[in-house]
Structure formats: C-alpha cells, structure tokens
Length: 180
Image 1 (cartoon, rainbow, N blue to C red):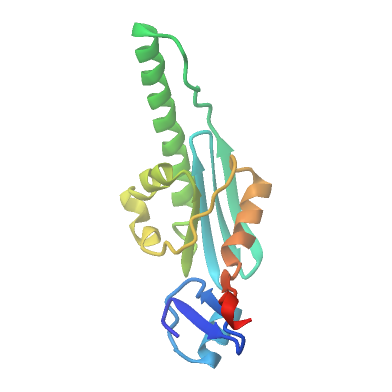
Image 2 (cartoon, one colour):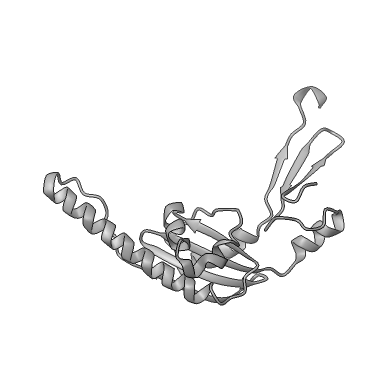
C-alpha cells in the first residue's frame, strides 16, 4: 500500500492494483483507505475544449454549482497562401477568446468553492491555458488524476464527468498461464 495505489493479490496469482482516488492516501491502512474512498469530497471539475467549456462543483455525488458555455472557433481550411494565414490568425484569436471565457467561468465557479480536489478534462493545452491565470493559482494546486477525455462540454457531459472523476480505477492482471 502506498499513498497513491493499493495492490492486492489472490491465491491464484491474480493481481489488482487500485488507484487511490484524489491521492495521496493519508492513513496507510485498510481503515484509512475505506475512510478515504467513502469521504464526501468537495470536488471541482473543469472541462475545456476549443469550442466549449464547463466548470462544476460537486459535494459528494451532487452537482451544487455549474456553468457551461461555448464559443465558435473556426475549423481548419484548405485555402493556401494569405487566406490560410488569415484563417489561422482568426482561429487563434477565437481560441484565445474562448479560453478567456472559460477562465472567467472557472474563476467564478471554482475559485470561491473551497475545493478539496480538481479533476480536469478536454484538451490539455486548453486546460493548462485556463489554469495559468493567477486568480486560479490555489485551484490549480488541487488538480488530481484522472484527466478526462470528453466531447464538447454540455451540462450532461459535465454531470457525467463528475461521476467519472469519482470512479475508482482498478487494473486487474490475470495469473500467468502456467499457474492456472
């Protein structure tokens, strides 16, 4: 047992490795693990993609505050020359505006929420851009795995991300063939 994972072996040689959710585990014991897993975490979820964003606060399994939004960011073009450069500049400006809107929502929803952990998802570069804002310095220090792969954030996607963030991940390894 470590602060980040718990390994259990079966008599047939099977091994289960359990990722400790919202690590680190403070008390390295069976009772400590159970208390840690059953704790009613105050969890923040931040989802950012080029076309949308969402921020939510979960108390236990209940979504208590949230905001989702979207901004248009033009796709790529096959035009060449000046047109391609103009479209690329437009896309970059639109993405900057979308990330700025996501940052404002994160500051408003996550900043005052007294979170214990933050799980992020979407586009890593976009999330990093949002979390670089100095107003989110304290919140950025709470980021814990997993990083969630999500489609464009809508309310339903945000709610599912909260459930996915609280899921306990277990990696099972079957026993070697010769021991069966």
